Figure (tube, rainbow, N blue to C red):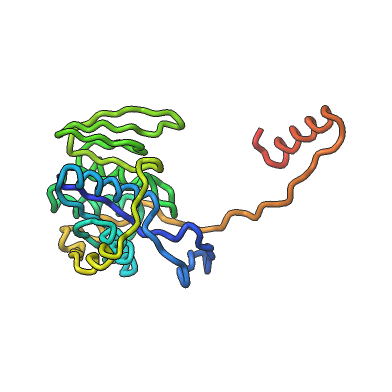
Length: 255
């Protein structure tokens, strides 16, 4: 079983985000392997342990992304592919195009990814990637069973469970509850430094920066507005209801 896991390095979920000139300031911020991708890596390792094969992680990003790669390798992934050319950093369109070109260079049966990244939360890249590779896609899975070429997945459907069947090759995205990610062992951490990381350029992928340029432009980045103090409505029930409706209509404008 040849398994590919798409990973991303993101801000630590406990990190304090600050802006400088409309750009997120990275100085002093701790970066981690995207938490949803941890579920994807764990599921890939479980499948390899049960059925044999190889797990390859693929990612795009600057030099600092190698820390997330080493984390995945320490967990047990066999090798990694890293595209660190700046022209490959872009929106979901760009990322999907680059990932697809990199993945096409390797044989694969199964692709896993996190359901979304905790920094942008778009959840678009995996869907786009499956389309580019012309393979089926199952999102937000909480259970995965593979028997031969047959795949049965349970997915989170807004609080309910939907059962979806497919055949390999297939791309699935991991949701919380799929498994319990393991921690890197000391031996795994030592071995990670010796595992191969293949560095690819756009030239290696036969891509040009113009062909994969972003389709979306970020105009401005703002922190959420500070929450104001709560307000206690006074008077009898009828008065409080009338005041609440007025606030929802005129102030909050949600009615």
